[in-house]
Length: 114
Length: 114
Image: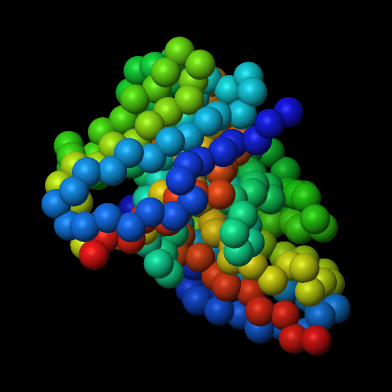
């Protein structure tokens, strides 16, 4: 079945450390790829997206993601996390030639250690 | 520019009742999508409205219905509530139905069915 997988339910990192959140998808053709962040009591916010072209995508808040076709992955990275980055992160895809609906992963909760 | 707003913030209903949730889209946006997010899961696409017409639907039964009004605000109606309908309901607006148009999310309505 077509799906989006975020293998890590939680990740704990120290403030100032680097971060990588994993996302894998299983679709025949490369879908459109997105990362969103959800902070408590706030709506989902788009961090970045990949449609085509350069496989390293820069987003807001210092985040970047790299698309790797061979691994069907779109991992999110940040070189140095801040306490304000504590939130839940969702990877989502839109299948090409679909009705544009977003299909979401289950999310990864990021916990920051002081 | 006013963001996406949703009302009410929280709601408690009894099994078998009906509920209406409301969403005001961001200024200039003519497309609204609704999502259901159960606890600990990613959002699930319910349906999308574009210029007052349903433009796509996820895997939800017909007791989930919606409306979009001429001012592009929207309602989600759920009949014959079940315990599993307890979730956070998210509304997102965007400018047009194109994939490249970012969806802006509201803070959600937390529905509890007892």
